[in-house]
Length: 437
Image 1 (cartoon, rainbow, N blue to C red):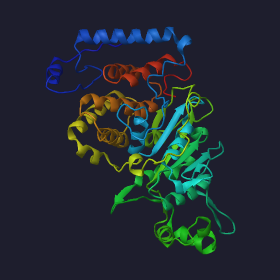
Image 2 (image 1 turned 45 degrees about the vertical axis):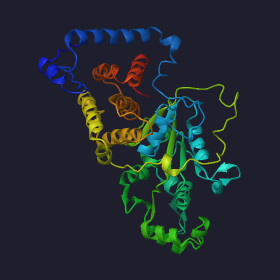
Image 3 (image 1 turned 90 degrees about the vertical axis):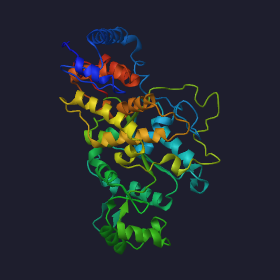
Image 4 (image 1 turned 120 degrees about the vertical axis):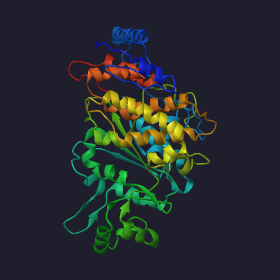
């Protein structure tokens, strides 16, 4: 391991600040030499201990870093509730990836969310009408299965995805949940390219969420002229308002859409690209409640008397600047910590940009808006720990030197990320190297 020394000037300057900056190579701010050597010895010992028990506890080492949804879906969420992280991630950006081994409840969460938000008038034969499951197929190389296609007769075949968007526009006050099951059986950036791009075009104009269109207004006019029954198929024959919207603006992203993808962490799926990871929050499911639904009634897949409201699930913040202005003190701490991580990643291909910065600011802002929350640095660190797990560690592959620096950086303040890094190192091998996946 390379020798690392600390700068006395930097250490004295640090005493006047309220948080630690981290530097690699020639200096690490905040640690004197004795402390640093102790930290390195402890860190190496942690890794050695985990490797000793790898065969015995291989399935348990990552448990502390992931989440387990083994409680009933809440009507009220406080900061300590098991669902808090995942619901705040949806508020930050309504695009999630649920990972983990088979049977941990990944797709079940998406269905549960639909049940718990579905009003009576959308309940269809005991099923939530605000839910759509799309099973991704390995041969999806284009966006046709998502966007649809034009036949030789000039009739447009609308996909289930587009039909679901139109339905969501009919009921904008209810969250609509789309589950992309086995999302990584095909390349996400190929079959879901339109969504990945359009998601980034959202903006509020006159209190209305607008975006680029999946199907343009010109095309909608073209299709409507050649298919007299098109509007009737979507229940819009008598809805002049929505017909005019689509003919004027095209089919844009509805403000109430939540996309939840699932992926098993095994050899059957494709690796996620940086383009996808930049836009998505990764939620790792690590716990299984074998008594779930056995010793008590399973209320999650039943319609509640009072469905959870749209405003409880969906967030309005789109830009990091908006979140920063809510609390510049917290914003400065968040940005400082992200700068420290960027310093560590500077010599690797895993650096992140403004999307991750904005996600961190927005995620923390939503958490600080929860009732009864204390405005402390400890809360910021806990939220950043979750952001590192959801947005930064999934990007990581290889680069042992960078990995060692991340271990030292996370140990003191980011325990869940530290545990996940130790797990990643313990299961690394000569073929796959060190990887989140």
